[in-house]
Length: 201
Picture (cartoon, rainbow, N blue to C red):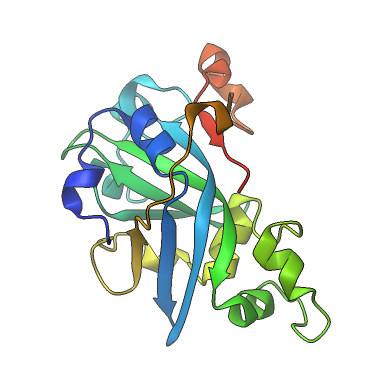
């Protein structure tokens, strides 16, 4: 079942970040359907979170989309190279977001391999599908695998380009690894918040 807008309007960004684990992230870009199961996320709590782009209600051309109603994409360029895909949550003017850090590819494997510059003829597809070979285990590689670019920022996640489905995967709390976020040392004490969630599927 495709997640509807109400899912993204949850006011607890930490809770929604955990709930996204095990969901299927789909894209249909350049006419190619691809998907992966979300296995790692990070929560960013907006104006009160020093690690957030919207800390202290900072509004710029890039971050303005974070202040929209939940259920849209926020894609930004990191180091001028990596396109990072985030999910805007909560209600209008509350700039919460969840960064998708890793997926387990399940649909369109050949396309995903090609986007990751891996020759499908030489790849062990079984290892990719089983998760033994991780080819989308960082936020930059997630977007590359699924064809997501900054031009896809601001898209409704209830549309036909990027969407998320719940296919009934149940994850026990004991299966979730919780820890601090990556690469946010500048955020001081907020860098230590347990806002990163990982599950091995």
